[in-house]
Length: 282
Ligand SMILES: [Zn+2]
Image 1 (cartoon, rainbow, N blue to C red):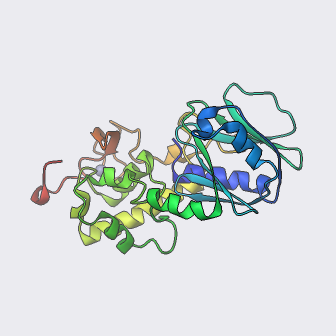
Image 2: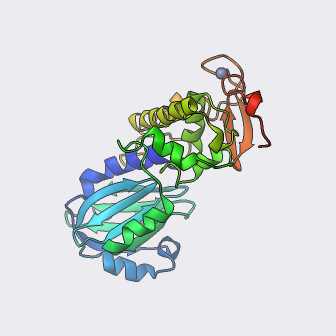
């Protein structure tokens, strides 16, 4: 599942191929991609638009057009892009193709078909995102106080709070586990009970884990590849994620996997011990 570093890698890979180009022809083969809107109508609307920028907000890709309209893309489980020359062979999971004015095709592929394309008018974008996505964790304005404000009073486990996109934009299962290990915080601690120094460690850990992910071009576990067809290498850097039973890189204690926030959660029971003084029903 693409999280912030994977989506950012896709954005960086795609950007040089699409910015400044005009969409000559659009074809959307899967009605699920644009529902409840008619895919043929969305494709018609896209034709003629010139791409002014490719941005990322949380796990969304935002294709900004010169007209001011924005195509907001969420890749969900398995959405991905590739760029190819004119008329490449159809892939079985290709859901949409954008023919650009230089003759190249931008192909959207999605095996599981959970991805979405939403074309919004200029004044619709910010209200739409404001309801769904919190601050960007790698922006300068994202400080420990920002994180603290988002977690204050919340009784949900910190792992669950981090997966809520309104807490930290772009977080997902992998980077939440990695960040909590870096910060030495038990994943089931109530989010609102973290101490000041724990919040500081977590703020730094979130950013470090995400930056490492971007530097390694994300994690390739199954379907994710970068737009130039490369595998990301972040999985080689995992400290706890997917390492159940292996020794903790910090203390050697076997990594455990539990259920947290309805997701498999990996942590070190020694480095990330639940403090006995504040133990509560998780
Ligand atoms: Zn440990």
